[in-house]
Length: 62
Image (cartoon, rainbow, N blue to C red; front, side, top):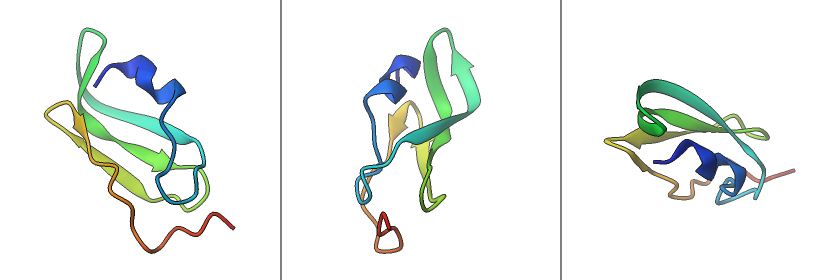
């Protein structure tokens, strides 16, 4: 995924901001890593450049 996408992505459940954790990068593309919710601290994986932002039940946003 393009690193600048972090500016518009939010947690699918709480709608809170996400922090990007990069494990592998190629240029401005993040190949491996995670997006961490600022509220519930759930980590959404990034694998082969594709973020997995499927909602989960543990984040309520409160």
